[in-house]
Image 1: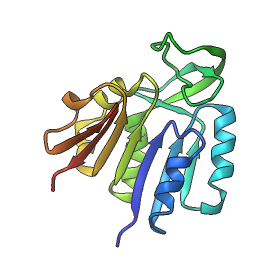
Image 2: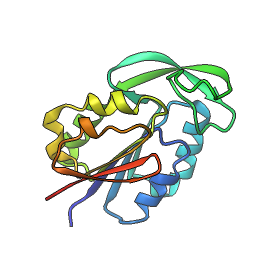
Image 3: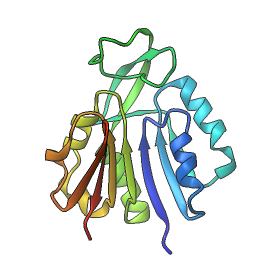
Image 4: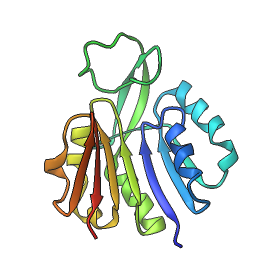
Amino acid sequence: VGSEMCIRDSSNIGLSAIFWLTRSKDTAVHCYEPSSENYEKLKKNLEEFDGRFFTFKKAVSSKNFSSYLNLEKSGVYNSISNSNKKLNYYKKEKCEVVSINSCIDKVVKQYGKIDLIKIDNEGEELKTVASIDRKFWQNIKCLNVDGESVREYVPRNFSLTKLGSAQRYIKNE
């Protein structure tokens, strides 16, 4: 059994990462979380999996840039996008944004594959998925995305299942 690898964008406090890390001792997870408060909770929640997770205090989108993270009280809907006018953002925090391609490249160079990429970056999903370099799709087994449909940017050899706003694309082998 080879190692399993997943990239988790907007990891929040790590509940999804814990799920994947408890499925197999061979799983490693790269977690990106730009909020200072959530990032500290994420690291604390993953402590028992030392050596199998990597945390980055950054947001993920289509390209590298500096931005401001709009913070809302629960921490669940923090976003670098202002697209959701219904949310009551109470302050901003400076953050670095890294391109999805640099995240994928780092993992592919280290592991040769990615079993799962989970993208839930509150308004940036469409641009993030649209920017994934074609050469990387051969290394990706599954893509989970929350938000609007990204079907047109995912290769046709990936089948789609949906539940509400959650989309799962699995490569047909």
